[in-house]
Image 1 (cartoon, rainbow, N blue to C red):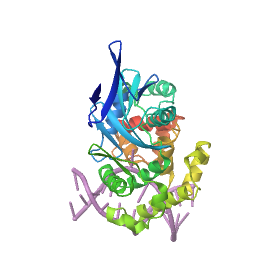
Image 2 (cartoon, protein in one colour):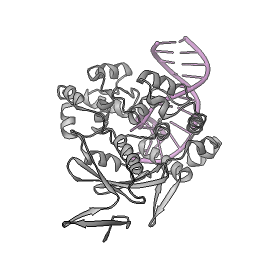
Image 3 (cartoon, helix red, strand yellow):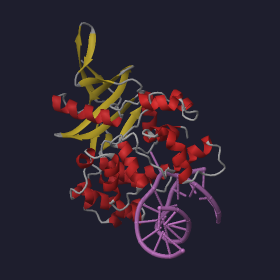
Image 4 (cartoon, rainbow, N blue to C red):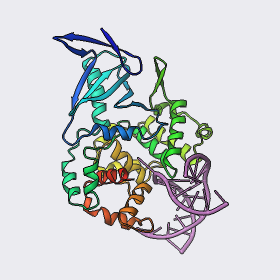
Length: 316
DNA sequence: CGCCAGGTTAGAG
DNA sequence: CTCTAACATGGC
Protein backbone atom coordinates (compact mmCIF):
# COMPACT_ATOMS: atom_id res chain seq x y z
CA UNK A 1 0.00 0.00 0.00
CA UNK A 2 1.15 3.51 -0.74
CA UNK A 3 -0.08 7.03 -0.45
CA UNK A 4 1.35 10.32 -1.55
CA UNK A 5 2.40 13.34 0.37
CA UNK A 6 1.94 16.80 -1.08
CA UNK A 7 5.03 16.66 -3.24
CA UNK A 8 3.98 13.42 -4.81
CA UNK A 9 6.59 11.44 -2.93
CA UNK A 10 5.32 7.95 -2.38
CA UNK A 11 5.10 6.98 1.25
CA UNK A 12 4.93 3.31 1.99
CA UNK A 13 2.57 2.21 4.69
CA UNK A 14 1.82 -0.98 6.52
CA UNK A 15 -1.51 -1.92 8.05
CA UNK A 16 -1.60 -3.74 11.36
CA UNK A 17 -4.90 -4.34 13.14
CA UNK A 18 -6.62 -1.71 11.00
CA UNK A 19 -4.09 0.94 11.92
CA UNK A 20 -2.06 2.43 9.13
CA UNK A 21 1.58 3.00 9.96
CA UNK A 22 3.90 5.04 7.79
CA UNK A 23 7.20 3.50 6.97
CA UNK A 24 10.28 5.56 7.60
CA UNK A 25 8.51 7.80 10.03
CA UNK A 26 8.92 8.49 13.73
CA UNK A 27 7.59 10.87 16.29
CA UNK A 28 9.04 13.32 18.76
CA UNK A 29 7.21 14.27 21.88
CA UNK A 30 7.36 17.97 22.56
CA UNK A 31 7.72 19.72 25.90
CA UNK A 32 5.15 21.79 27.75
CA UNK A 33 4.67 25.20 26.25
CA UNK A 34 5.39 24.37 22.67
CA UNK A 35 3.10 25.42 19.86
CA UNK A 36 3.96 24.06 16.44
CA UNK A 37 1.57 26.38 14.63
CA UNK A 38 3.18 29.55 15.99
CA UNK A 39 6.55 28.24 14.83
CA UNK A 40 5.09 27.29 11.47
CA UNK A 41 3.70 30.76 10.92
CA UNK A 42 7.18 32.13 11.52
CA UNK A 43 8.54 29.72 8.90
CA UNK A 44 5.94 30.98 6.45
CA UNK A 45 6.75 34.64 6.84
CA UNK A 46 8.47 35.08 3.50
CA UNK A 47 7.44 33.79 0.08
CA UNK A 48 11.10 33.98 -0.86
CA UNK A 49 12.25 31.46 1.72
CA UNK A 50 14.30 28.77 -0.01
CA UNK A 51 15.56 26.65 2.87
CA UNK A 52 12.27 24.94 3.63
CA UNK A 53 8.86 24.45 2.05
CA UNK A 54 5.66 24.94 4.03
CA UNK A 55 2.29 23.69 2.98
CA UNK A 56 -0.60 24.34 5.32
CA UNK A 57 0.25 22.46 8.45
CA UNK A 58 3.60 20.92 7.60
CA UNK A 59 7.11 21.84 6.64
CA UNK A 60 9.61 20.00 4.45
CA UNK A 61 13.30 20.44 5.07
CA UNK A 62 16.53 19.21 3.54
CA UNK A 63 19.65 18.70 5.65
CA UNK A 64 22.96 17.04 5.07
CA UNK A 65 23.36 13.81 6.96
CA UNK A 66 26.39 11.66 7.44
CA UNK A 67 25.60 9.64 4.34
CA UNK A 68 24.08 12.28 2.13
CA UNK A 69 20.89 14.24 1.91
CA UNK A 70 18.10 13.76 4.40
CA UNK A 71 14.75 15.16 3.28
CA UNK A 72 11.95 15.08 5.80
CA UNK A 73 8.54 16.48 6.61
CA UNK A 74 7.41 17.66 10.03
CA UNK A 75 3.78 17.94 11.07
CA UNK A 76 1.80 17.74 14.27
CA UNK A 77 -0.60 14.85 13.98
CA UNK A 78 -1.85 15.30 17.49
CA UNK A 79 -1.08 17.87 20.14
CA UNK A 80 2.15 17.14 21.92
CA UNK A 81 3.70 14.98 19.23
CA UNK A 82 5.59 15.93 16.12
CA UNK A 83 5.33 13.48 13.28
CA UNK A 84 8.45 13.17 11.16
CA UNK A 85 8.26 11.49 7.77
CA UNK A 86 11.50 10.74 5.96
CA UNK A 87 11.10 11.39 2.25
CA UNK A 88 14.24 10.09 0.65
CA UNK A 89 15.91 7.73 3.10
CA UNK A 90 15.13 4.68 5.14
CA UNK A 91 14.79 5.01 8.87
CA UNK A 92 18.00 3.87 10.46
CA UNK A 93 19.14 4.71 13.95
CA UNK A 94 21.72 7.14 12.57
CA UNK A 95 19.28 8.96 10.34
CA UNK A 96 16.76 9.18 13.11
CA UNK A 97 19.30 10.67 15.48
CA UNK A 98 20.50 13.14 12.91
CA UNK A 99 17.01 14.32 11.94
CA UNK A 100 15.70 14.40 15.49
CA UNK A 101 18.71 16.38 16.69
CA UNK A 102 18.16 18.88 13.93
CA UNK A 103 14.47 19.27 14.75
CA UNK A 104 15.10 19.63 18.49
CA UNK A 105 17.51 22.50 17.76
CA UNK A 106 15.38 23.96 15.01
CA UNK A 107 12.34 24.37 17.29
CA UNK A 108 14.28 24.89 20.51
CA UNK A 109 12.63 21.89 22.15
CA UNK A 110 15.23 21.48 24.88
CA UNK A 111 14.84 24.86 26.51
CA UNK A 112 12.57 25.02 29.53
CA UNK A 113 10.86 28.34 28.97
CA UNK A 114 8.64 28.20 32.04
CA UNK A 115 10.93 30.50 34.08
CA UNK A 116 10.58 33.06 31.31
CA UNK A 117 6.81 32.79 31.44
CA UNK A 118 6.93 33.37 35.18
CA UNK A 119 8.82 36.61 34.67
CA UNK A 120 6.77 37.65 31.67
CA UNK A 121 3.43 37.01 33.35
CA UNK A 122 4.32 39.70 35.86
CA UNK A 123 5.27 42.18 33.17
CA UNK A 124 2.56 44.40 31.79
CA UNK A 125 4.15 44.54 28.34
CA UNK A 126 4.79 40.83 27.87
CA UNK A 127 1.80 39.46 29.74
CA UNK A 128 -0.55 39.64 26.77
CA UNK A 129 2.06 38.51 24.27
CA UNK A 130 2.89 35.28 26.05
CA UNK A 131 -0.79 34.51 26.32
CA UNK A 132 -1.48 35.22 22.68
CA UNK A 133 1.58 33.34 21.42
CA UNK A 134 1.82 30.70 24.12
CA UNK A 135 4.29 28.03 23.12
CA UNK A 136 6.06 30.10 20.52
CA UNK A 137 9.75 29.34 20.59
CA UNK A 138 12.90 30.49 18.89
CA UNK A 139 12.90 28.94 15.45
CA UNK A 140 16.60 28.53 15.23
CA UNK A 141 19.45 27.84 12.86
CA UNK A 142 21.25 24.64 13.82
CA UNK A 143 23.85 25.61 11.19
CA UNK A 144 26.09 28.31 12.68
CA UNK A 145 27.43 29.42 9.30
CA UNK A 146 23.89 29.92 8.05
CA UNK A 147 23.02 31.84 11.17
CA UNK A 148 25.94 34.25 10.82
CA UNK A 149 25.62 34.82 7.09
CA UNK A 150 21.87 35.31 7.33
CA UNK A 151 22.50 37.90 10.04
CA UNK A 152 25.09 39.67 7.90
CA UNK A 153 22.71 39.64 4.96
CA UNK A 154 20.06 41.23 7.16
CA UNK A 155 22.30 44.01 8.43
CA UNK A 156 20.84 47.43 7.76
CA UNK A 157 18.37 46.37 5.05
CA UNK A 158 14.69 45.56 5.19
CA UNK A 159 13.67 41.96 5.66
CA UNK A 160 12.08 41.57 2.25
CA UNK A 161 15.27 42.53 0.49
CA UNK A 162 17.25 40.32 2.86
CA UNK A 163 15.20 37.32 1.75
CA UNK A 164 15.82 38.25 -1.88
CA UNK A 165 19.57 38.28 -1.25
CA UNK A 166 19.44 34.99 0.62
CA UNK A 167 17.45 33.36 -2.14
CA UNK A 168 20.01 34.40 -4.75
CA UNK A 169 22.93 33.31 -2.58
CA UNK A 170 21.43 29.90 -1.77
CA UNK A 171 20.27 29.18 -5.31
CA UNK A 172 23.64 30.07 -6.74
CA UNK A 173 25.98 28.45 -4.24
CA UNK A 174 23.94 25.92 -2.28
CA UNK A 175 23.52 22.27 -3.19
CA UNK A 176 20.17 21.31 -4.62
CA UNK A 177 18.16 18.11 -4.42
CA UNK A 178 15.41 17.61 -6.98
CA UNK A 179 12.53 15.40 -5.92
CA UNK A 180 9.61 14.96 -8.28
CA UNK A 181 10.12 18.34 -9.83
CA UNK A 182 10.49 20.21 -6.56
CA UNK A 183 13.85 21.70 -5.59
CA UNK A 184 15.25 21.62 -2.08
CA UNK A 185 18.37 23.52 -1.13
CA UNK A 186 21.08 23.29 1.45
CA UNK A 187 22.62 26.49 2.74
CA UNK A 188 25.97 26.96 0.95
CA UNK A 189 28.96 25.18 2.44
CA UNK A 190 31.58 27.48 3.98
CA UNK A 191 34.31 25.56 2.15
CA UNK A 192 32.73 26.60 -1.15
CA UNK A 193 32.10 30.19 -0.11
CA UNK A 194 35.61 30.58 1.30
CA UNK A 195 37.02 30.14 -2.20
CA UNK A 196 34.87 32.87 -3.74
CA UNK A 197 36.17 36.23 -4.75
CA UNK A 198 33.89 38.67 -2.87
CA UNK A 199 33.21 40.37 -6.20
CA UNK A 200 31.25 37.32 -7.29
CA UNK A 201 28.57 38.37 -4.83
CA UNK A 202 28.11 41.88 -6.25
CA UNK A 203 25.81 40.69 -9.05
CA UNK A 204 23.51 39.27 -6.38
CA UNK A 205 23.35 42.85 -5.05
CA UNK A 206 25.41 42.16 -1.99
CA UNK A 207 27.17 45.36 -0.96
CA UNK A 208 30.96 45.32 -0.89
CA UNK A 209 30.78 45.11 2.88
CA UNK A 210 28.38 42.17 2.92
CA UNK A 211 30.42 40.38 0.27
CA UNK A 212 33.66 40.76 2.17
CA UNK A 213 32.06 39.78 5.47
CA UNK A 214 30.38 36.70 3.97
CA UNK A 215 33.56 35.33 2.41
CA UNK A 216 35.57 36.22 5.52
CA UNK A 217 33.20 34.30 7.77
CA UNK A 218 33.34 31.33 5.41
CA UNK A 219 37.14 31.42 5.57
CA UNK A 220 37.04 31.42 9.35
CA UNK A 221 35.06 28.17 9.17
CA UNK A 222 37.19 26.69 6.41
CA UNK A 223 40.40 27.38 8.29
CA UNK A 224 39.04 25.87 11.48
CA UNK A 225 39.29 29.16 13.37
CA UNK A 226 35.53 28.99 13.91
CA UNK A 227 33.20 26.06 14.38
CA UNK A 228 29.96 25.22 16.07
CA UNK A 229 31.67 22.59 18.19
CA UNK A 230 34.21 25.08 19.47
CA UNK A 231 31.64 27.65 20.50
CA UNK A 232 29.24 25.13 21.94
CA UNK A 233 31.54 24.57 24.88
CA UNK A 234 31.83 28.26 25.73
CA UNK A 235 29.80 30.53 27.97
CA UNK A 236 27.96 33.40 26.31
CA UNK A 237 30.53 36.13 26.86
CA UNK A 238 33.42 34.08 25.61
CA UNK A 239 31.56 32.85 22.53
CA UNK A 240 30.57 36.43 21.79
CA UNK A 241 34.16 37.61 21.98
CA UNK A 242 35.31 34.88 19.61
CA UNK A 243 32.62 35.79 17.11
CA UNK A 244 33.24 39.53 17.31
CA UNK A 245 36.88 39.12 16.38
CA UNK A 246 35.66 38.37 12.87
CA UNK A 247 35.12 41.32 10.55
CA UNK A 248 31.45 41.98 10.02
CA UNK A 249 30.30 40.40 13.24
CA UNK A 250 29.38 43.09 15.72
CA UNK A 251 27.33 42.85 18.89
CA UNK A 252 24.00 42.48 17.09
CA UNK A 253 25.15 39.72 14.74
CA UNK A 254 26.96 37.77 17.46
CA UNK A 255 23.99 37.82 19.80
CA UNK A 256 21.60 36.99 17.01
CA UNK A 257 23.59 33.88 16.15
CA UNK A 258 24.04 32.91 19.80
CA UNK A 259 20.31 33.11 20.19
CA UNK A 260 19.42 31.27 16.98
CA UNK A 261 22.07 28.56 17.00
CA UNK A 262 22.91 27.96 20.64
CA UNK A 263 19.69 29.12 22.29
CA UNK A 264 21.42 31.20 24.92
CA UNK A 265 18.36 32.60 26.72
CA UNK A 266 20.34 35.71 27.66
CA UNK A 267 21.69 36.51 24.21
CA UNK A 268 20.57 40.04 23.49
CA UNK A 269 20.63 41.75 20.07
CA UNK A 270 20.56 45.20 21.62
CA UNK A 271 20.93 47.21 18.41
CA UNK A 272 18.06 45.51 16.62
CA UNK A 273 15.84 47.91 14.68
CA UNK A 274 12.76 45.73 15.04
CA UNK A 275 13.21 45.53 18.78
CA UNK A 276 13.54 49.31 18.93
CA UNK A 277 10.28 49.72 17.04
CA UNK A 278 8.49 47.28 19.33
CA UNK A 279 9.71 49.18 22.38
CA UNK A 280 8.83 52.50 20.84
CA UNK A 281 5.25 51.32 20.53
CA UNK A 282 5.00 49.66 23.90
CA UNK A 283 6.61 52.53 25.78
CA UNK A 284 4.54 55.00 23.74
CA UNK A 285 7.57 57.00 22.66
CA UNK A 286 7.41 59.45 19.76
CA UNK A 287 10.87 58.32 18.66
CA UNK A 288 12.96 55.19 18.83
CA UNK A 289 14.51 54.44 22.21
CA UNK A 290 18.21 55.07 22.77
CA UNK A 291 20.41 52.06 23.51
CA UNK A 292 20.49 53.11 27.16
CA UNK A 293 16.70 53.10 27.25
CA UNK A 294 16.56 49.66 25.66
CA UNK A 295 18.96 48.32 28.29
CA UNK A 296 16.90 49.89 31.02
CA UNK A 297 13.66 48.42 29.70
CA UNK A 298 15.29 45.00 29.56
CA UNK A 299 16.64 44.94 33.12
CA UNK A 300 13.54 43.14 34.30
CA UNK A 301 14.01 40.38 31.72
CA UNK A 302 17.52 39.57 32.91
CA UNK A 303 18.56 36.07 31.91
CA UNK A 304 15.75 35.85 29.32
CA UNK A 305 16.63 38.67 26.94
CA UNK A 306 16.49 36.37 23.92
CA UNK A 307 12.95 35.27 24.65
CA UNK A 308 11.79 38.77 25.57
CA UNK A 309 13.17 39.90 22.22
CA UNK A 310 11.45 37.03 20.43
CA UNK A 311 8.04 37.93 21.78
CA UNK A 312 8.56 41.63 21.14
CA UNK A 313 9.47 40.82 17.53
CA UNK A 314 6.31 38.79 17.30
CA UNK A 315 4.32 41.82 18.45
CA UNK A 316 5.26 43.73 15.31
C1' DC B 1 12.23 62.21 -3.48
C1' DG B 2 12.99 61.02 1.49
C1' DC B 3 13.30 57.96 5.10
C1' DC B 4 14.09 53.67 7.05
C1' DA B 5 15.64 48.93 7.15
C1' DG B 6 16.50 42.47 12.12
C1' DG B 7 24.38 47.08 11.58
C1' DT B 8 29.53 47.40 11.37
C1' DT B 9 33.68 49.70 10.89
C1' DA B 10 37.07 53.18 11.19
C1' DG B 11 38.23 57.44 12.74
C1' DA B 12 37.63 61.54 15.54
C1' DG B 13 36.75 63.82 19.94
C1' DC C 1 34.36 55.46 26.11
C1' DT C 2 30.97 57.77 22.95
C1' DC C 3 29.67 59.93 18.62
C1' DT C 4 29.57 60.06 13.54
C1' DA C 5 30.13 59.29 8.57
C1' DA C 6 30.28 55.97 5.11
C1' DC C 7 28.63 51.91 3.21
C1' DA C 8 24.50 50.56 -0.56
C1' DT C 9 20.07 49.59 -2.15
C1' DG C 10 15.16 48.09 -2.03
C1' DG C 11 10.51 49.10 -0.31
C1' DC C 12 7.05 52.21 0.67
